[in-house]
Image (cartoon, rainbow, N blue to C red):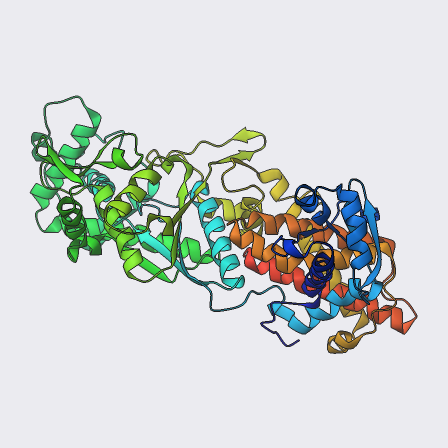
Length: 584
């Protein structure tokens, strides 16, 4: 079936057509109210028609007339239309339109003509960047990262399908203290392999992957990086503060290893970043750009960003450190951008990074952050404003935490202890499809309880199984028919007369508008909900009617509707990164 980039199928034209009819009536009833927005919505009850407008109620105050009287006048002035079977006034003044059967089923031909392009928006819109995941490469991705990955990837695909020019980016935190902690963690495990144990800090990285990297270093370089434990301990500060002792171990590693420290650091970075890339690729999450934090320092961008803030009067000195007056921009307190030892903070590199995004010409940048970064938003936006950038071009969506339940028990997740469930483990247990779909079953700003028992069940209660089963059912019917699917695009749809068929057509017709609304609201979860409803409408019809009936006209019409449903299921599931099985 040939795909098209059509973005305005006949089903959407019906809505526009009805708005045009109302606009014509409005010109007669209230010509000075021509700027009023005409809203058409689908009623919740089928008995109220296919579309309803509250135009009369919008006009009541200005016309100083009851909405029902205005509605009666508007209906009298409506031009006749072959798409409208009847118009009724309901309640206080709603205008309800009931479409003809031909208008209701026209969406089937629209879907089959557009194919994979059905619902696609007009190309050439704003240039957007979506930056997501961006987890420190200090260990395997956990299930919380997985939610950010699924949300960010689905959002980027949704925006691209809606017509935006989208770049997917991962910000690699390859500079700073966390990478130093990982490097010293691997080095201490390496020393243990040569019987030079140093008490391992409880706040260092504990996972088995750290021991694996230590073994890799030993296999590659033998005892080259070994130093006596006494020499390491001699470098530590005389303090009980755990973070200070950890910093002392990092300094000991750098001093004792000298230039060799860069190898250990690079090894652990490359190992974890490679693992992260592979994990995400296997999850169906792909990036156009992997942006290095280190490059911001190497090119002097961090220094320039701080200097620019200083020149504009937004930096002050205190106790030898440079502070950004972020309270002037709504933050709860001012923030250090350069410590008294000359080292720039994470915040300073984040300022430089976001300025770089704007320099690259993006009309809008969308950051997907964890919910615990909520307080970070005003300080970043404040720094952008202080730098002369338009902070409104930065939009941040927050992804709430995930609670993973197995056999009714909540799994604990702790980054440094290593006692967390990784994304890879979750994928292996429930599969990519369940992961991608289940992550979309809540708005991103709502906490998510991930039920493993439900995700692995083959029942209608499992939403991803329910949706995929609808697709597989259609494939099975088409395989039994064994006819030319291309012929269905020209099928006479007149035999489609049952309410379940009209309901399914109405659901298909919602898809293009849903895409635009979900993209506008950064809400890919709305697509998951829609697919559940679409699958429900199909299963209800399938269980009530035979598709492969003797009458050829009816058979072709029903198969055309089934094929259109399969196409929309495919379009929606692909945006969520979920496969479309032909059998189950």
